[in-house]
Length: 352
Image (cartoon, rainbow, N blue to C red):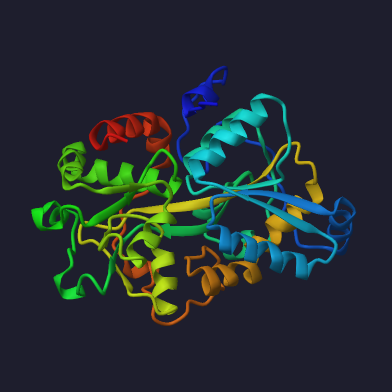
C-alpha cells in the first residue's frame, strides 16, 4: 500500500510548528517518572513490548534481550525496518484504528511532528531524561525522547583506497576518477538518509546531486546497507550511511574507515515515543525508561557505537567525539515540509 507523508496529513488540523520539541497545543507536562516496583509489576502482568524501530536489527535485538534479562517475564518483539517504512506503517495502522505497537523508534525527527499533531503520542518523561539530558533532546510535553544521535559520514574500503588518497569533501566526489566506485542509500527508505540528503541539497544545491548522479553511484535502500557494500569491496566509497557500523566494522577487523567531509557531516537525531493506545502501556513505559537510562544508553555507546544524549555515558577511546565533528544543521521542520520533494527530485536524478 503506497503511503506518503501527504497521506498521513489528510484530515489533520494544520498549524505551524516552531521547533521539533515545541507545539502551540501543550499537553499537561508529566512529572519525571522513575522505574518503580509498581511499574515493573504492572509491566510483568502485561508480559510483552512490541517495538517498531529503525535501529539496525542486530543492536535492536541485543537491546531487547538485555531488557528481557533485566526484567524476566517481559518479552520484547522487535520489528525492524527503515525509518520511512516505520513511519508509513504507523500511519496506516493508526488511520485504521489499529493499535499494535507500544514503543516506536525512528531515525527522522520530522515523523514526531506528524505524530504529535495527530495526537498519537502518550506523554511520559523518565526521571533520568529530565535529570541528565539537555532539554533540546526531549519534548517538553514528554511526548518524544532522543534515543541516539546519528552522523552520516563518508566511509572507505581501505583495501581498495588508501586514506591519504580518499576524497575528503563532497566536492571531490564529483571527480571522474570516482565514477562507478561509490555507494549511497535512498531517502525514500531511510530516515538517516532522508535527513542527510535534505541537508546536502540545502548546503550544496540540487545541482550537486544532478552532477553526482552521473557518477554511476550504486543505490541501496537502508543506511545500514551502505557500510556492508564497502566492507565486501563492492564499492570503495560510502557517500552516506550508518557511520557507527563502519566504526564497528573497523573495530572487528574489517578493512573500513570513516572520513568526515570538510563541508560538514549530515546528522539526524533518532527519537523514540510511547504510542497512545499501546497494548502494553506499563511495559511500554518501563522499556522507554530503561532504554533512556544510563544502562541502556551506555549499551548504545559501547555495543552500537552510536552517540548518546545522556550526559553520564562514557565514550570509548578511539572514536571522535560528537563535539569535535563539524556537523550540518538538522532541520526536522524543513524535512517534514520537503520530504516528498526530496524523494521526487532524488528519484528523477538517479532514476530509482
